[in-house]
Length: 118
Image 1 (cartoon, rainbow, N blue to C red):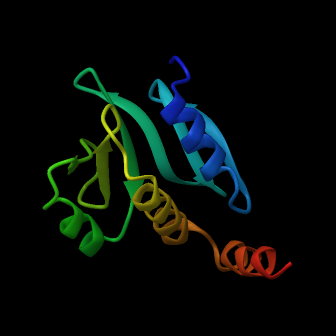
Image 2 (cartoon, rainbow, N blue to C red):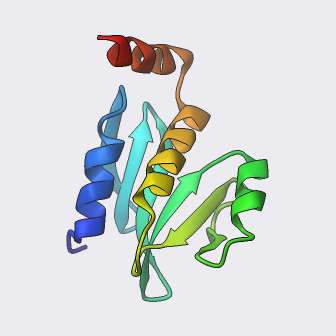
Image 3 (tube, rainbow, N blue to C red):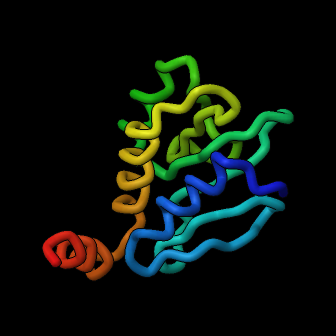
């Protein structure tokens, strides 16, 4: 998959969190906190998108916005945003952090707090 400017920016943001890494699965980049995937960049129906693992209430709320859609494999726990138009990066950053916190272990979240205070 060609590294788009969206993917480069997404990668830079996701990899700032403690114990994160990028892997490739199902033909696209995935970002993991420990063993759990929290964000993915993928092509859906020929269009680039970013998928976030979020609590179901957040997914339900986001689905009311036109740029969001149900991630095909999400079982109600994932929501995706189209990444081929103008992105609200403040919102994307917030969703990345929410997704990370959804799957991260307590020690990872504690490390975020200690990183922020140093």
